[in-house]
Image 1 (tube, rainbow, N blue to C red):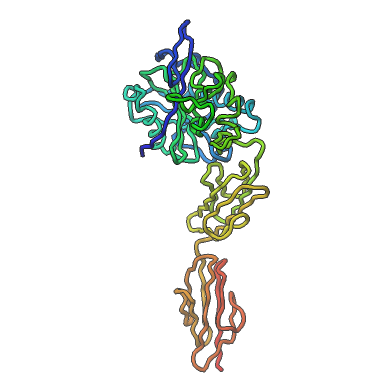
Image 2 (tube, rainbow, N blue to C red; image 1 turned 45 degrees about the vertical axis):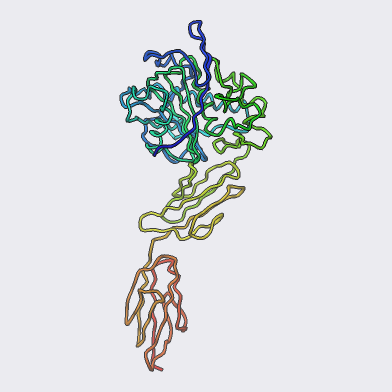
Length: 441
């Protein structure tokens, strides 16, 4: 599927061997050669990454909620440098985390983490494109081509933003990053790593991520006009300023006036409210209990329970839960914050808990007749004289009717039915048997 994403970019002013370049859009740096992508040439803080290469998003996520999933993308004919860039990506994620907490003690981006032997680290997926590096070298169309490749690889959730590090040659070595989202919420923040020598890739990634969550709205008072719209023009230290030098992310500010795109009091979109941020000041646990053979997951990543489990969410997080029965089983009912056997929708709040009750898809009901008479079920399956059995959906009551022959009467039921009334209802909460005894009048 081809998505129409509106991409924004950032202009950079980077001194290289005493020279400086500047342009209206894109991260602008010097030309990059293959030698420039050696680990020491990338402006980042490499961090040890102990994960393993993956071709799909690992589940469940360590941190529940709308995540930022990290993706390493390379052209069809490109060498696989994941061993180099995984550490760069992990280092950038750590930098962004620390920087964001310093800017706002109540929020931090929710990175998609997986559990590895050394602990929780970035869950990085590798995507190899079908196009060659030469086919993707031109800037025109590159953003959409990479976004489509991410989408078609199965990384297409509207609940997830994708931080993409593209490791391929670029004709326009000045443009270092682009980011944007479509109307569904699917968003991609791309760092063109071979064009980012001399520029903090952490700053690029953070800038482009903010574009995916709607920064900077056109209604913002300091939104830049013309080709730089989507950026702020009031403070050169603002991370969303349309140009940046070679300084580290730590020197940048997150909407320093709190009047444009983050933590403002205006009526336009505020990135501080983004569900892709963990609310450090408002976290609430959700307890899920599973009875029987099945599992419970959520549309928003981070919850996958086959036994009792507890996950932690932003307070007020809206969740749609999905109950998946094991083969031969079915969902009988929800309990707690949800009820019935249909969709389960809830807002996570204090004391939130949900129970999913699964049972075998059916139980067998056996009926026997003593004397002369007939037992039928209200639903097809039972028509006994003198013995029969049938399977019925579990936990769906079955009504039995006893009809004596002429000159006979129902004396009593036994087994799953009791008494002498002609009708009996069996709850079918387990395999059951019933006997109707008829005697002469």
